Image (spheres, rainbow, N blue to C red):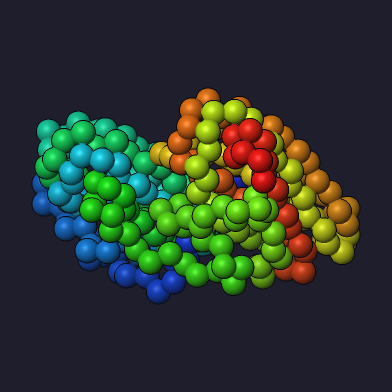
Amino acid sequence: MRLHHLFATTLLATVSLGTVAHADNFSTSAVSPGQLPANGTIAGAYPSGGNETRYYFTADLKPGVLSSQIAYKGAPDSAKTLELAVANAAGREIGSYYIKSFGENYESARGFRIDNSGPYTIRIAVKGPEAASFKVDLGGSSLAGKVGAPLPAASGFSRSFLVPSALPADGVVAGTIPAGRGAMTSYYFTAPLKAGKLISQIGTTGSGSTSDMIELALLNPDGTSVDSYYTKSFEKHHEATKTFNVDNSANYVLKVTVQGAETTAFRAEFGGSAVGTK
């Protein structure tokens, strides 16, 4: 069972929402959409009332991939929804996705294939308590590569799907879980894989007094999931292994998500024919 099905109440946004703009300034008119900000980032607070609100933006896109990462942050135990949709000049939707949970934080990423140059409409729909905030980062080749600055992490690992870190040459990702007891933190790594087997091993080592978790997801270049698995336990050390089938050679994204005490160490190791001999 996928992690987000089991732990939908405790997922973490991988980007910092920081100081947010007033969403009241965003256009709610599909006829007169606002201009997409120059850095490709849209951030704001959820509006009052708790009802669904839709914001519209326009952007001139060219053939390529429109990469996106969406996230929200707010009080736990309150339902929050964030949706991103992209439509062409004729109003035909070319793709959409959303995130929803009762957790404090949540995030996801996706790439949209853009076939033709022209103006596109970007729709963002939010629903939840006004104390919550949201952030949408857009970039990729269809936007001439523009992207908001990624959040720096103490580990040196990227928390941005749009600007992932390179997988270390030795195939090992290791660090300690950052502060934020109930939160989950995701790190993104790009890896040029070839058709074959991707062997992985993940684990955490902690005090044994808290529940610690690590999840690994293999993502296609467009952000869709190939497969994922996780291990979670109160034991001082626990680990799990999985072999992924890689069908085609491409630049894949490895997403490592951790949760637990900030003194807990985590480790993910990769090998197999898909990455060659280490």
